[in-house]
Figure 1 (cartoon, rainbow, N blue to C red):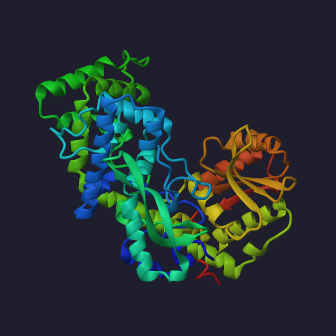
Figure 2: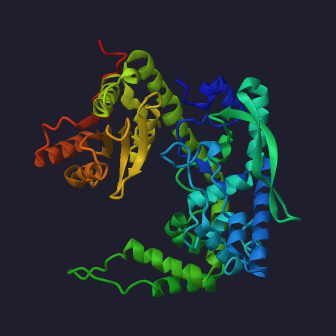
Length: 498
């Protein structure tokens, strides 16, 4: 099955690993992204140079933001990069088509640079300036925007990195010369310049490899939720007694008046009220951000180890274990040969998945780390389901929205044959609501009366809860509600079964 870079370009996975790159899927994005802090914190001179180049470009944007009124056209030219979809990384559940930083990101970043962060590169506390600082106060500049922005700014490096690998390890018949736009920024003309590269070609587009040691999952090392969570530690790290007192005082002043229980015990402030008070402190004392960044710089080694662990988790789950899973389905079952109308085909595939997960050690795919904890994210299930449909003649459309909310998957063969597949974790707080209302609404919106509801559980408690809800709703005999047992505490390995 041609799912991964190594499959399609006939390269051994170990060769890609030795080169230092991540073996991406060319069917669907995998949930990783570039963290600019890993450039800054690296011992590699080429990475440090990339970080310096990023700051140079941000300084250019700052200087223009202060000196001129930046028009919408220039905002789009200087800030609104298309997503570098050719890395096949990110959180898209539809192939590799993401959006990239848009005009709201551009306006927010431009406003930050001309006001509160005009001196972002004048470091008095932290060792370096960091692009992520621009995302700590205003909205619309989150993880995805930062990663897309950075990926565009280091695209030239990724192109050369991939070209060097391709020329050494990939047959020339699988390569093509591409004229890639927006690779190098010309500071004399204030414009982006294209360049040509010999790259792996897939589906008439080039593919980029990304070094594993630049990648992470979940969030950048410097991020706003972490700042909120670490507020007390950051204030404690402030050496100036007067400033530390001011930060604590202003924080307490912005909290709501305390509430008390009937027994007279003071209630803890709500998380949203704490976050609002900390936001007020950041607005009043922007220096808090510099102390936070220094705090994160001082823990830089943790960023490297944690990111490496998260990348390995994704690799284990979506490359190693899932490739074995797909190989098993392809060679040992009729999973990829099933046909018929979409309801029959979808149900057969769901039941195949159920059989392999429950009876053929397939459940192990959900336990990629040694700690024994399952991966219980619906988004992960969606990616796995999409990857296992890679050879189907039916159209598999994730996150289809027909105006009344998205459904996980719409499986279709033309306009008249469509089946909806909805995945839910048994632990979901919305499981009852979903079973009672949600898919019925989707069926009407998509003009189909065919739907399959798949519920995955990882423990006896989750199984009991799911069955209890199904029984309460009178749905115990509903064929198209499928429970899948992904517990590991009740399995006998298929290799040991008699």
